[in-house]
Amino acid sequence: MKVLQINIEEIPESELKPKYESEENMGFGQIKTDRMFTASYRDGTWKDLTIKKYAPIILDPTAVCFHYGQTIFEGQKAFWTQEGHINLFRPEKNAARFNLSAQRMMMPEIDPEIYLTGLKELLIIEKDWVPKSKGSTVYIRPAMIGTEPCLGLRASNEYLFFIILSPSRSYFPEILKLYVSEQYIRAAPGGMGSAKTGGNYAGSLLVGQVAKKAGFDQVLWLDAIHRRYVEEVGAMNIFFVYNDVVYTTPIESDTIVHGITRESVIQLIQDFGYTVKEESLAIDKIVRGIKEGALVESFGTGTAASIVPIGSLFYRGENHIIIEFKVGSLTKKVSKKLLDIQYGNIPDPYKWIVRVI
Image (cartoon, rainbow, N blue to C red; front, top):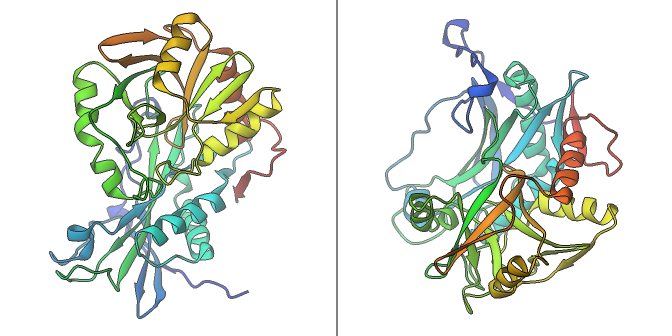
């Protein structure tokens, strides 16, 4: 196997950032560590693998990413364990999903070895930034942008791949209030809804602001054709619990992000003895289930969210309460099991954890 050559640039002590004063007040994505990992794609190959000082990226104003949206990204976390190691959760899945996004956006795939080795080396060097308190993690943002100067409509021939780290707390409040959008859609069949590309998220900002101004936390998106079937929440996949049967939207459609947390949670739910049905539910059936008491709990899953309970759905002028002040029993069990595995508190029977020494 070829050994990757990563250039590690020295940073003068005087240029290092002061560490955060309190892990409780870090927020999400606000703090960046001292260094970043970068690699450049030119002449058909990835080169210039470097760990260097975190700094602004200088681009030509005609760079393709600005004009034609060639941007993709991933979201991961690193967890500090009681044994003093850093755990990554299924990072090979993130690398694979990143390359699926690259294919959809006409961008070059990155060698998973570059992705994973660069990430691990960056975490080792920046280990002092990894928070150690419960509920704190390092959020990891790998990304790729088309950098070639070009105003003609075509794919870039040059790209920048980078990984940055952000010590963070939870992304969401403890229980979410969702706003169901009928006027706007997130993605349509045949589009790019399954890719983690900037345009998908830019298109959600307007209705997200509408929801927040009305007092809600996130948007629950319906399908583009019928405006009836639940797809996903703004930053999460979603699950609905009907006693011992749990429903979640299937990912065969190209309108759904293939959630790695989602896939893992399905395994945990099944191991707890529940039946999981990957089936699109109509919003009117969900509302009826809430009113009749058949739908007993709901939760969202994602890297930033981990597992977060859904308290209510606002649909057609009416707020439908699922739970108010407590977390459902299955939500609680699955969340605890997942976090215990990620933080190394219990053995990992699924071989999901990659330890960074």
